[in-house]
Length: 329
Image 1 (cartoon, helix red, strand yellow):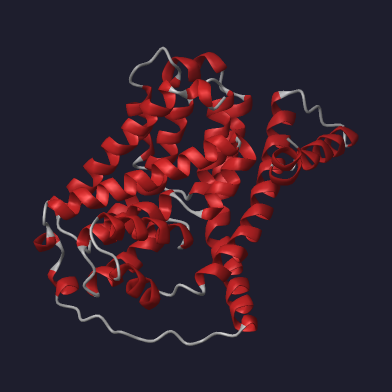
Image 2 (cartoon, helix red, strand yellow):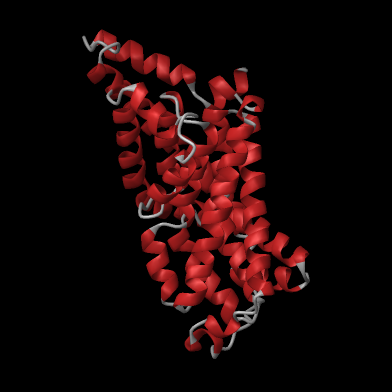
């Protein structure tokens, strides 16, 4: 498909890099040459897509500052409030650590705890950027399915936390804080474009090191680790592959843009689709640094419940995708 391969996937860039390396005397069929080609292609592709997507998403986000998002979510009740919070999470920052301050603000403002947790789960796991980048690598069906199940995990997880009435597990300084209801200033188009440009620079500076690390790991997996190893550990012959991938992802820290190159290489080497997606979800949602930050806002019991719900949900999603992998690949 031309749009997926040449526009989103930028296969023309891969071809151009391959021709350039061969002109410089680099054998792209060797391990080192293949690693260099993989690294240059993925770094350039992801960087271009990332800058474009940050600009677009930030422009949209300029219409949804925290106080306006709070008002929007406050109009809904029950499961619909969780759904709205999960959807709003798709147009917010790109990693869990960036989402936690907004989660604290929403909780301080008096929004239901389950609703704010639906936002907290959705924001790092699912965003418009991940949809486009996933489409560029895995195709439209996988990307849309990933986003839908991510939203489902966010809605179900937030709803469960709401049902358990754990408001007393939020730290006192957040519960006693009074929400300041500030009206959003009306921004001009020029101001929104300037805001989007500033977000591109700021976010790219934060994200780029993780892209380099993620693509570097992907290049090693893609060209140096034997396919049989990946198939043994994360392939269909290992019934615990999803659980292992989820647990391995939790202590790591990266946003989805740094995780996707690793997932791409794992899938190419024979890992199952659901196992790879479970790894991605665990890294973006349950990273250790974000859990340390979240512990400042909630007590251990609620933090443990959040981690348990997300881990179980991610694991179930992984097995579900593995069972129906034939529909996507």
